Length: 442
Image (cartoon, rainbow, N blue to C red):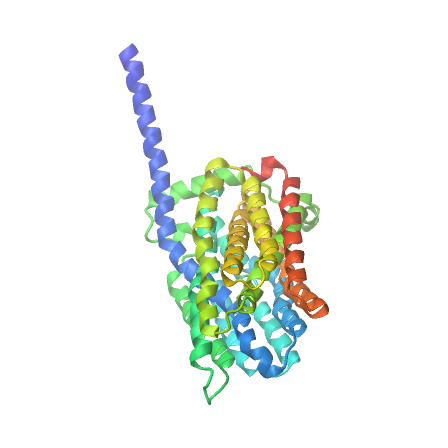
């Protein structure tokens, strides 16, 4: 009898191990199949959103723009983003990611290229607003798309992979932007910043066309998955959705205090994200590096440092199920970088080191954040919440550059704006603990 029992236990253990290995294999297969293209798409999106930070190095002088004008124009992108993001995500949920993501990418690439026609502050404001309208829904749409493929326990790594597109945009886009600006500074056709907007819009347009042929809406439509793998994924997602929240009405959705808490946390975090994205080239230049090509290469360093930080933090958050702790620590690290940056003065090495700390902290927190709402929301609620949190939180994308630009202009110093960014990051690190552990750390 003892031998029979041991055999049964051994067989059961073997089956359990085989099932666990199967799950790892299928989600690894999905990650390798869909994530590289998604990363490329987000890289082009983010590059088109923030290349204005490099254009600023020459555009402001050519057009006689102040820091306040630049800050307002950089931020007004997010006003258009705010109004159209939730409708965009709901449409994606209805018509499918392939068609809608392609529409978003093609539209924004055309508007991004049209930035070369900017001549006045009003032109600048209108172009940035329309770019926000065009791009609205892309980022939350991709995050929603990932919920169709990965259960929450597997999503931390996929979100980490997704958000490495931001540092990749810095690693790749910084040097490319610097080279374009330096190489074409004497062009007789148009200014180097105009060339920048035109040339960096081309990859987005090509990627938008490619989406129509390469993106698959859901696992059930993936020809490269077996029927057993499709069923396995569907069972995992259905089992998870059974214990998630799906609001019955708009009123119940809007009345969910946890969603509003997360929105406040995300707002504070985005203040830091665009503090880096829109001002990093300027901070490097102010440290004493004047050659725009060198600024481009050096601006890649903080993003390069952030790459392993994003992956490692996503993996450890999945393994330990302590998302709040990891997120809070990452924001505090980011705040420390922003505080140190103005204290080291005009020392390029120390400024870049401080920016490395700030960038690694803020970008790690960004990928960690989205594991929280997607862990306890399902269906239309997930679509609406991801878009709602993203669009309301992204109003900080308007506040951050405008706040820093206004403070720079009003005080004549860049340190005040950076301290304000650090204060928001610290506030976000504290607010995340208001989200119940039972929801955040599943």
